[in-house]
Image (cartoon, rainbow, N blue to C red; front, side, top):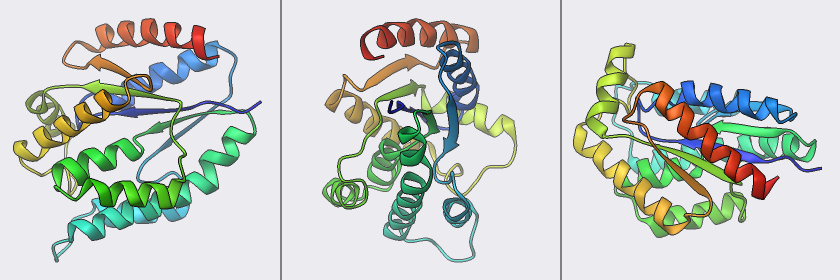
Length: 209
């Protein structure tokens, strides 16, 4: 039996890690083996690329360089970890995937969406998550939470306008493929988001398991 591929998306500070933990526990209660992973990253090669993407550098990184690095990491991640795990029947839960590229490199960096789509088709050949949880939060609230956590990476230091554009791009992704997405209001408390998450997952599971 092939497993399910679930991704969790959203801006910095929306609570992805916390809700991913809740989601993982929910999956286990259904009797499924779970593989937790993240993007960029997930395998040794992809994690090395992650460091290049997120670390501060003396030179400015070209947006297209960033885009190509993200897709290089995704190809390695997908073929080395995600697909094999699904084939074995495990459920894979990833902190971000291709929707993040449309949000950050498309919305935030303003790269051509047709170029991103071309790379997606080249790298993934139609492979998509079975379900995407979008934790939607005001950019100002998310950034304040992220700054409270400590040091910020190269992308997290962008200005509020950048993140508002990323959020708008997530909205476009949601509207274009509403059957794949569950949108949750992440401006709420952690417990309120968890309650909404579990309720939505139960409804999805009843029709997709």
